[in-house]
Length: 144
Image 1: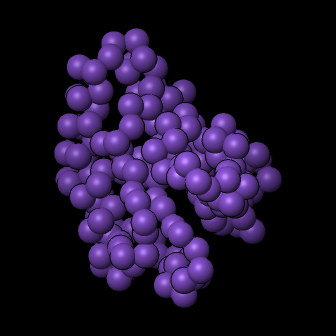
Image 2: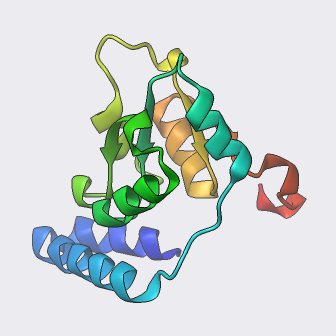
Image 3: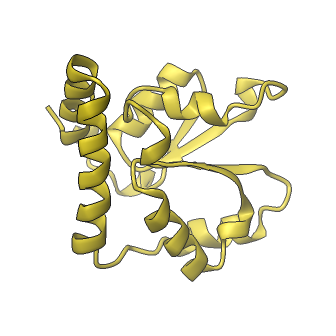
């Protein structure tokens, strides 16, 4: 099991008390241990120049971390809505985060989920939306 799968199993079995502990732990871990991030210049350039698209973020990271990084990159204002760790009960590969982003007047075929993990791919499949792997051309065959 991955860490997110394990967290999901515990939340399903033990409920909100465990969820609160995981949320508290996530914030503490990110504050103390995350020391940087890898910039994807091509993706950032796309985000900056793609004015014809509504963009959203669905991340398993906490909101303060997400907004801090997006502000540093100068792209926070490009996103219509952010769904973070604090906004969902169950992490990807569950599609709960997408449900919080999905506009009632927007067909699912209008969405493209850009992700960087198997859980992202499975979550996109469960949500019924197209998926593009961010590092598609660099992923080893055994990934899938």
